Image (cartoon, rainbow, N blue to C red; front, side):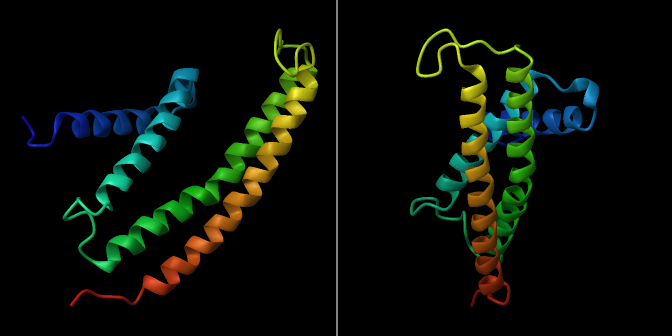
Length: 148
């Protein structure tokens, strides 16, 4: 028994396992990719709880916000690479005929769907860069703050 709540302990173990696997390209898999994305979503959910009005101690010092938004800024700074690599993969796979679409708006048009997704990912890259820049303003404004 570690004294850490069971769900937190599970998330910490998953994060540690993912970090170890991420360092070894032979360990990459669709499961790792999905787990990493899910961990990001769960981390943001945890931050929402930690910074909420009922958390009590999620934020005690301004430096917590400096660290929080600095880390989010770093993550957003890496997002354009993720989005570009995803767009490149979709485009390549669709052009090679390895993606099929049986139903929906893009039925029989995997290259058009890949192009639409790539365009949306380009927009996401630009928005992530803008958000990272704005979070830089948050860290600039909070860097010299201290609690009384």
